[in-house]
Length: 261
Ligand code: F6R
Image 1 (cartoon, rainbow, N blue to C red):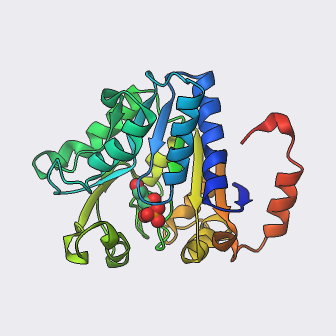
Image 2: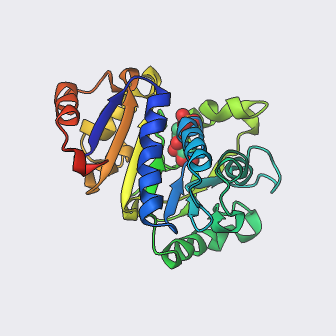
């Protein structure tokens, strides 16, 4: 099962996630990070940026692979995930821009973009630590309900619910692209450590389904139950529909110090 850590707020979650990433980079200076976009990982990137700069951590060899990208936005569109990753991750963390990849959502090359991306992840030796958010539909990456648990990077159609949720980043819901290219659930499961974060009541159902529901394509997040090292970091609101909450707290407060997360 996933290890579930229930924290006070997004800041505490970001600090915990950053600690795990710093430990990884210290032990493996060319670590490969799987990078989520959206609101959820922002405190993680913020905390990580502060640690990197305050402690002078050398991240020049760190590599990164974004989870997903919209199809059809112009290269310089401010809400393309290429732009978002450059603005919110590569810049603040001082990563080497050439070491960070985002799947290409260019319609001209979209037929081969998925297999190219898989080959690039393989060539990098796989992802060491994958940061994940979860959508209200239960999606991880942009693997909407029904996505095969064995899927690899490919084009998907976004649900209308996800398009509405992401409309906040665009002028209107109509401007949110209909299609995306996303790492598959099979791709995500190959990462060596999954770290899923979620905050707020709106995520409580998706979190409960992912952590305690049946493993099913109907709740793509439930695939984390198949992974040998999955950490779920959530606030009280996102944890509010979990059944075994007392057990998660008990396990966390009695966790052997040497174990780390
Ligand atoms: C983002 C991604 C999505 C988001 C999810 C939650 O790269 O793959 O799965 O993590 O839609 O989005 P936020 O964090 O904005 O609530």
